[in-house]
View 1 (cartoon, rainbow, N blue to C red):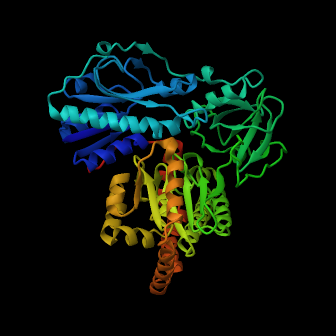
View 2: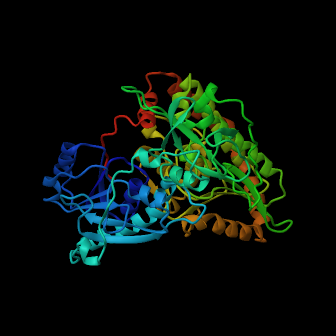
View 3: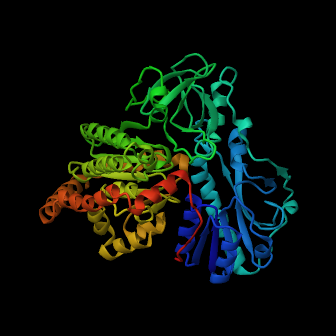
Length: 566
């Protein structure tokens, strides 16, 4: 069918729906962030058989939904209405939730039901709202979309009014900051964490620090550090630790409140955001090895499993939004080198869930005194990390993607010997939409896996790729059919099996020989030099599109667009 996707932003769910519907042979166009007239124009131009809105913050105009079937993906069960459904679910601690595909009508979220798929919220160690949205909720949303599209395509399904299923109508208002506000003197740590997790990526929790207003982003528990409620008691890997009345929490990122009439401030690692405002507090080392009973935060950790001679090492990492600053890259590289010093035959580098990596940290770059120089240092640090994987010839290296990856993050994964990917993850193996040529040795790894023609097409089209399509293209070696919360455990079992494989020694010897042949044909240093020659011009020429595109992306400016057809 010809389907027009309508979205307020080409976010993770819109990308997943786009990629998976394209896999099923549908002809797609996307209107992103446009006004009513842009939507009307797109409808006239593309004459779609169906309009589908995976993520929409505004109403579809009546003249459109009355003339065309318009399906809306609502992140709540039938009967749930309002713009902050998942915020309320996370803040309330519900265990069961759902995603529903509704037909657009005059009253928001009140249309007839085409499909509804339930899901279980994560358990006690619950991740934040955005993580749940990209994982458990996205799995349910994708299933509901495919069910609804199939029903519409069949022509013999009649959607059911919400009241017909006995659903109780609950209208929840927008989740305002007064509901999110933390009372540091009174709120226990569990309540503080719930408030932070219900707002982790957007909009954050508005709070006061050093006489200024800041949005707090992300929240992780801390079981040992203590202090006066609200006090910053320590830092670790760019995050701050604030005491509650009965414990403490880690807050990885901060964003200052926008000044009237000013540009949207950038979300940054908390220590960097505070700068000189931060008082002298201990920098607590980030433990690579973390005992199972500890409840603390670290963004990089290492563990091993298996018996001597057949051990598998696991380097787990998770950076907010998948963005990797110069500091993130250097710390991960140091941890990787530590992992290489260990007697393992298989080394897995993995995101346990959610983002694997989206490449360089555009927020840190945008906020830097010299964005061009920070861009240059960041890409060099990414290249150093990727090169370390490419030059590892004494063991099998696996990149296991528990969630989405883009740009340099995809290329980081491709540097491994094998790429394992959770079903439902989305890859964006390109740089063009940010006005960049790209580095991270992509000119070596992408054609090596996909072929020269396919590599050029992926870069040119700049379209999201589903996990299944990535397997077909040669970018991914194994799909991991696991729920988000089970991905790390399933990956660990698969890696342990690889470590016991009698053929492993031969495979490792073969990869070492292949690396020598490739190096003799064209050294890795030459690929890097050629890529960075182009990137240097894009970073240091202020008229290059990269600078305006980066600014618009980070500060969420100028989002109206119609993406090309697939």
